[in-house]
Each structure stands twice: as structure tokens, then as C-alpha cells.
Image (cartoon, rainbow over all chains, first blue to last red; front, side):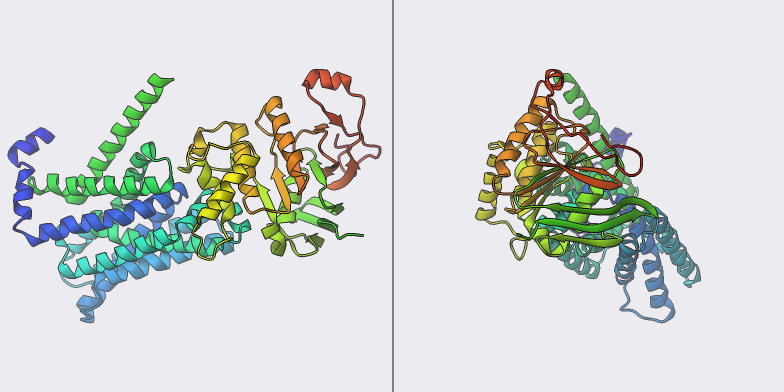
Length: 292
Length: 250
């Protein structure tokens, strides 16, 4: 399959067009920026085992995207960019899930499931009531990295730096909270604060990744590169660096391979990440088996 | 009389209406070495968590160093059961021990001094040179010692250890108790153990927990038979009174 793709539309076509088309450059840069935040925060998310929360936040983002688009079209609030709506929805979902799991002693997975589905339902209602074509829905769900504008890119760059700075600045505290929350509490770390901070950072990372691969595919991009990195990494910061590098490779490859044959870039990225994970898993198994 | 290091006064605790501890009073003095023993679900870990202020008594008071457990936390070094930790976690030995230095610096960055103290703590538990080893590569006994080093890194007055002898063989256990005996020269030690009848000769007092608590001095018995079976120095605790509830705990 892949070989036939390459014959018809060589990857080199992507690199030739990359020099001419700014939208391709923006797309490449978006993938690059999102990948760094994804490596840092994804490592926390995987080691703290909260991927299901990341999934819940990702899907609830549809409410923000839908509401912002609705306001743009119906009330002519031009400034209310869907990405702002996404940031708000993601943060609200993160805080609801975090506060409920800390204080209410409710079944956490029930709350996550509720936030997940209610967020999507609200989003669908807004999209349904927004006049005009609803071509947006597919790009929200599965991403459309080629649509990223210069304005989007600035916002993405701002969010990206915020996530990375906070994620790196509080590395020691977040590491302790992820590894042994009880011990961190005994050492005077405000565990609840750092847990909520981690969920908010996860929410912002989710928003970045929605622009790259879309709502439905976010969890895969947050976990698969970290899983591959986990095979090589001995320490958490190594896991962050490795998985950021892998994510850059996957998003770039996804863009390059999807461009020629004109297939969705987000889905291509995830398939590549999945294959890389599977391959690493099998090779690692064989090596550890042959050693023992 | 000196203030006791840890004091329970008529402490009662229950989980969701199920009584776990009933009317417990106990006192741990400076440089005591107390072993908390008893059957599973008898309330041993609950006692440790009350000492740490992670749980609150339903009635009665817990005082540590004359204060509330929360305010005494910085003087306590705590070692949880390593089985409660994620063994896939990407951390090395020094990373783990450095967590014991958290809260010592304002912004949470570690300085050279913190790393030096962490290495000293590793030396105390005879784990020097393991700094860069992944925590997941270690044996059970080595992990226990790394977690003790983490507890020591804040230079605590009190050491609380949850099941330090689980999942390790008798030879390793003997070595561990020698280390604890050395630490006991300057620190008060409380440990929880599932070994019902037998505790090391370094232990000074034994608290038997089964809803109620009875404290004994570790009394020597003629246990040649037991010595033969275990191949190490062991002591047996004999109960002269029966324990309230489900019969004697030993």
C-alpha cells in the first residue's frame, strides 16, 4: 500500500511544496510546537495514569469549539475564535473532574464519562443550530492541520510556551505527585494544587493537539509516543525528551505522507504512531526474551 | 517526665461505620523501637496513618512531639510499602531519594547540598553507588532500603515504616534490622509488620493490634526451636491477657 502511495505521489512532493506554500509551513510548525508540549505533559499523564481524563477533556472541547463558532456566526463576535472556546471548555472540564475527584468522593470514572459525553452533546447542539455549512464538525473531530492560520499559530505558540515553562518549572513537585502522592503530601507539597495544575496543563495540551489530529485522536498522540519512549527512558525527563522527538517525527511523517495522496493528515499521523508503537513493542519483546 | 514522642489518648477510628480501632491509648518514648503487629485488617496501617495525620481519629487525640500530627510531619520520615508504587515508573534511585528533600527548598529545586544529603542517606542504608540505577531494576530488599533512604533524607526524628520486611528473605531482613538498630541510636522508630509472633531482638516494644492495642516490652523467651527453624535471632511475645474482640492476636 505504502509503496503504491509513494509511486503515485512521492513524499518529495511535500518537501518541494513546503518551500512555496505558507499553509504547509504553518502546518509543519503547528505539529512541531504541539509535539513538544505533548511530550512533556503526555509523560506526566501516562505515568500518573490519567489518560482517560485526558480523553474526557478532549471530547468535552467540542462544546467550546461549537459555542465559539456559533457566537461568531450568529452574534458576529469575530474575536471569539473557536480556539478560545476550546481553551475555556477544556479548563472547565479539567477543574470539574479534578475537584470532584478530590472533594466529592464520587466515582471518578462516572464523572469523567459524564463530562466527556455532555461536552460533546453541547457541541453538537451548537453546531446543529449554527447557520451555514457544517464542514467544521469533521475538522474538529479528526483535525485539519492544513487549515491553521497565522493567527492560530501565534495562539498555539503562546499556549505551547506556557505549558512547557510550567511543566518544566514544577518538574520535581509534579514528579513526586505522580510517583507517590501520599509521600509528597507528607513532605508538605500541596498535592491537590499540583493535581489540578497537571489537569489544567493537560487541558491546554489537549487544545493544541486538537488542532493537529482532532478531538477523537488526541489520546493516541498523548500516549503512543510516551509508550515508545518508555522503552528507552530511565528517568521522567528522558521520557519527555524522547517522546517529544517521537511526536515531532510522527506529526511530520503524517503530514508528509498524507499530502501527496490527499488523505487526512491527523489519521495518517496516528496510524504511523500506532505502527511505531507496535514495532517497538515487538522488537523489545524479542530482545528481552533472547536475553533471558 | 519527658513528653512522649508519640501519644494516643483514647483513640477510636472507624471506616464507613466499621470500627477499626477502639479506645486505643499508647505512648512511644524518645528512641523507642516499637513494632506494631497484628492480623490483617486489624488496624496496623491505620495506626501509622493516624500518626502521620493522613487519617483523623473519630474521637480521642493523637499527638506527635507534643503537637498535631500535621505540624509534626516535617520531623517524620515515612516509608510506605513499595508494592503501593508503580514499578514501571521511569525514575532512578537518586530521583527517589531526592523526593525526601522536597519541601526543604522554597521553589522545589534541588541543590548540590540536597544531592549530597541524598547520597549520605543511601550510604546509611548501604546502597552507595546505586544512584543511577533504575528503581524498577532493584530487588525487593534494595527497594525497601532506597525508600528508607528517602525517609532519612529529611533528617527526621521519627521513622515510620510500613511492612519493611514483607517480600524479603530472612538474610536480607537481618541486614535491614541491623541498619535500623544503628539508626535507632538517634531516632525513634515505629514499624508495622505482618510477622505475627516473631520480631527482631532490636525491637524494644511490641504493640499488638486487633481493634484494641496492647503494648509489651519485648521479652526474651527460650526459643531454641524457633531459632532452629528460622536460623536467626527471634523473640516471641507472649500475651498474658486475652485481647478484646476476636481472641488473642498472637
